[in-house]
Amino acid sequence: MSLQDLDFIDLTEARDTVLTALVSLCAEGPDPLTPLQTQRLVEGAVATLGLGPTQAEEVRRNGGLLTAPTARADKVYSGVLYDALDIASLEGPAKRRATRWLAITSSLFGLVRPNDPIPAYRLSGDVTLPDVGVVSAHWRKHLDPVVRDAAGNGLIIDLRSTMYAGFWRPSADTGARVATVRVLHQVGSERKVVSHFNKATKGRIVRDLLLDGGTPNTPPQLADHLAQLGWKVEVGPAKPTGQQLDVIIDAI
Image 1 (cartoon, rainbow, N blue to C red):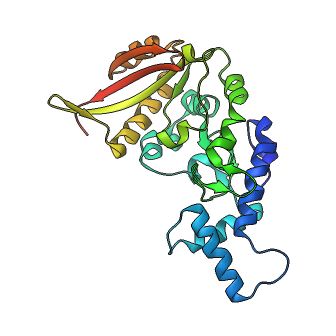
Image 2 (tube, one colour):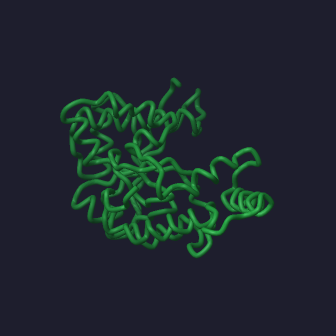
């Protein structure tokens, strides 16, 4: 793979730092190791990465990242959000919007576009890598100017989970253009977050926005736009770091 093939080219050096540290942690060096040394290397990497005892293959995969085959990021990443979003089925303008509008937070690459060619890997944002530190903290030092440049004067719709929220935090001068979307399941008078359906709903919301093509400029305008698309939305108070929109669903 080549880091030069990825969008957000200003992240190349920061990406190389994480990639080098991850491969070094997981790969054997040029000198052959004994079976016992290899076992200890894998066990150490498993512990550092927070993997289970049966996930040694993930370590070997990480060790081979420099020569691993690549695929579109939206094919490498999986889960209920990506299933609900279903980028592959989008056509024409909606598919082009997905490439231009969407940015995926990545522990290895910081940010990627859906069509960026990346290898499959295993790395969590809360891992502490040698010579890097905590992965989320590493990206927090690099992502702000890239996010600002990518967003321009447009609205930033933040759909990240708690883990990835630590990679980039809106500052006071961008907060007015940040809408943080939360999905709540309502049963009677009780509302709660249900992780699986939270992610699936976010995927459907993004798909609706891509198909519609509207470009609201503020969080309240986004709330009105989502309401026009059939979603029930409540707008929270504006804060220096953004404004929360609660999408309320009563059926999952």
